Image (tube, rainbow, N blue to C red):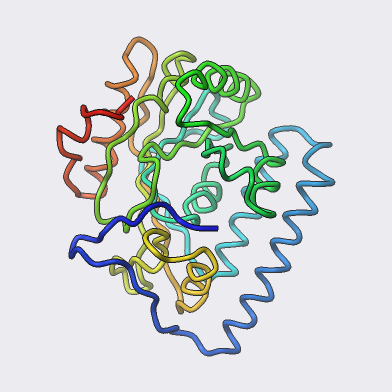
Length: 281
């Protein structure tokens, strides 16, 4: 399993693996608990999820995700205009830093995420994503938009929240990439409510850290090893005020979400040529 194409940091350098901050026996304990926890997820997806309601799945997912963060000694910090419990027709749109983002968001607001179709072919992870209700999109096919609209409409109709990473790839968290407006088409078609969410990671002392960042040449196992090697981290998510998608275009919706997250992260908006250039749709 490999991360997206390399994205350079603000200093123009590729990410490097860190020297572990924790002692070896602590790391062994975390690895052991992690394997057991993943095994539990496979069992839930196979035996429990097919037999319970969407609401019950969401509660299970939230508890499982919260425990994963505890195993990794990651403290969840939630701020901002958090959607009301039981909110319907809701889409969460977030910046993308790490594979951890899904579990960080799920710990606060359980969601079924839209993901690239290639993930379905990944060993174990692909099966788990499919069983948990992930909506797979074939980004290279414009004709796939209609199917995604229908799937998202049906998912939202069940009361489940849908999650998006509109950048389409990950960064070190020190910038914001162009939001692909095509991913917001189902929100407009279904007149959904969009909750922009800013995701950040800090050390236990409150300093920004890229220890959780999953991009460049870092492999998936290396990323887990790096996170497990940290003494502790803070996963910070801030909800911006929600945006009603009815009556506006997908481009405007993408811009509004982009601006809300950029303001929280205190980073510049993507360049104009990025936002309106070829490939935006």
